Length: 150
Ligand SMILES: [Cu+2]
Image (tube, rainbow, N blue to C red; front, side, top):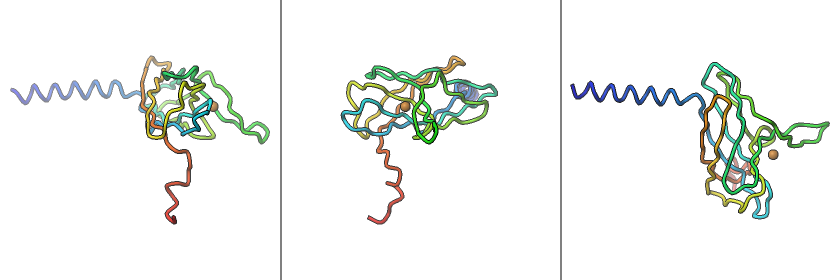
């Protein structure tokens, strides 16, 4: 009798977890910037586990004047950032936010966060999902981990 109760409680927990797993965010991080930086880039991977296209509509973080969705595009050989009204995540696909591509831009920080600290980023999607992720500030030097020679 006891075991049955525990099992059914477990099953309902599993069901709740799955029901909330429409969107899974992996590896949110922020590229470290100088103390006087006016913007910081936020990167992550967003998995759409549903059969419907989803849009990331907005992002919010405390301590920044504005937070925008950006995409870096090649404009006649010149790379520039363009603000986007939303970021599309097609059904059953993953949107990758990375340097030189889609990203979330933290604008005008009250204080630039230190390497190793985390910033809570609230994400709002057009299917009603609101998810807060903790993005860790990391050095953006790409080759760092591959260099075994020093
Ligand atoms: Cu940007």
